[in-house]
Length: 119
Length: 111
Image: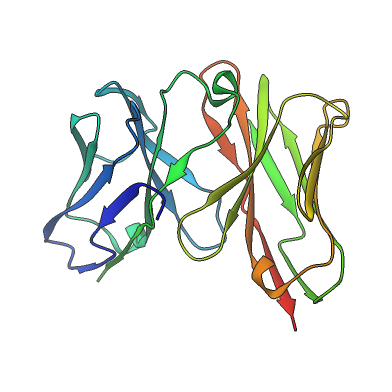
């Protein structure tokens, strides 16, 4: 148990469906992240929220829509996805978004991920 | 373009062997280098390195950074089956604190 909980763990959806991924952290952190992990590829940062404000959006298609209602919760809303969007979506948190080295821990806390399959 | 390259992509060894995993990087402004272990889903933190030549150690795992040659190694001695995992390397950028990740090394330890 890492203190970061993601639901659902597995999701299968058609290209016309609308679904959401949820992430909750119980660590009192102020920064939360969405990452996409495809097979044999590096982790791709999608979005960063720091103190509930979105600070990074790495050219992610608009069919992915993040929402951060408070520092403990992060959602990823999915709409009209493509088969190539099938991947493991990882949520992570850190104390704040001002640099891991400054925290002297280098630690991102990851959730177990949501395995998404788009048919 | 900032990039992090890990090698080998995969490695199979026998229990008790020593392994060395490599991470090389080319980034515009380096802040720190991090190692994570991903056994099933959630990557877990191993080390953060900021200075050259200072070894970080945790049990059978150790890591060192060379900022001149732009690489880091992760050593695991007396490997056990529980060390089987994907080992991820990431470099933190000084400009925006973003992490640039490598594709990982998949390590399999055979009994």
